[in-house]
Figure (tube, rainbow, N blue to C red):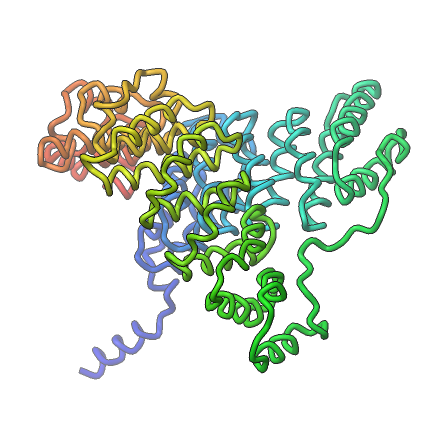
Length: 528
């Protein structure tokens, strides 16, 4: 009994790492995030290990672990994916999805991985340009600038110039470094470098004050000098500066605000951008109680630029607290034509009884900003769900028209809306070209929601593993077995031999599973 107690005490004293099995690929599947985290650095970067890391990068619920995987891929040798599988194109698809991660730190490190591992890739370049101008995290925007220069080279100049208007000097400095990198990595021919320098300066001729200052700083080290840059006049103000209520210490301002019985709403709106959490929360609390919501019209301006810290998120929460009382702001938002205000107004019209505003919606289908057109699709989908059998044909027609939009974001939103409403085959003839224009996650979702045999065949032959996985699961859902036993024999042979472990695992039936367990051909522990 004493020996048993001693062994029990020793087993309890072992650390979480010592309690692991010692095989990194297996520990990546452990429920303990600490074991998974240490396994990330121990996995061998062969085909099995890279697919296992992909699984953690895209599916792990633990944010720091996703960051660690992206960091490992950023450190991996550039030539690792040239031997394949997985191929460099597959790695690009993984990183493209990681650039959409909800955690800013994952997006930031994924940008570094992209800069190291990805060659020219149209979708990634578009995503990096979007992150540079729209991501709420300045660290992500700065990393996106550097990655865009590394991936696109000269083709990144237009996107980087837009980043020079960022409200944060660190991002502007990162853009300056990225533009300098494009020139330094160009041909050794001095004439070619001079052409690039002139092109960069010409692209920045329209910039505002702060952006021209950043460009002048860059040009000061070039032979062209600052004379080629439009003059920087005036004082550059901090765009994130809040209202000074008599003291530079935000804690003091907060105390004064808490002690005040009444404060003019016009003095509270600028406080929504303060970095001091109690101060902006108190300002939002007071603004939510105003009798006349029209005094909040200036606050709608905070919705326009997601790069401004704090303000857009708290304004959205403030408007949500108003609920139906926010209706007096709708007309001004629709008349403004500004994307942030319009997106909020569309969401409000869909959530509340906004029938009086419905005639204004068709005109937004041609708005210049894709965010507004995508928000219109989401609003139409909600209206279809709420008004089944009443006015849904009008909204369905607008969503169907959006499947032919010039923006892939709008096309995907429209196609997914019709698929989720079970209206895709009724209202939209999605041909092969239209299907191929969707992103991989959208194609996978369409395959899951659409029951046609043609769509299943397209999914099983898709170049992206997520879509092939959806095709296999679709066959299992139709059969009621939930596995790949009902796949066509030729399809099942191919999917069982697929290079991607996700597809192989989903394709298993009882016979194939027994064969794998009795044999030694399958190295991936997730399939075993």
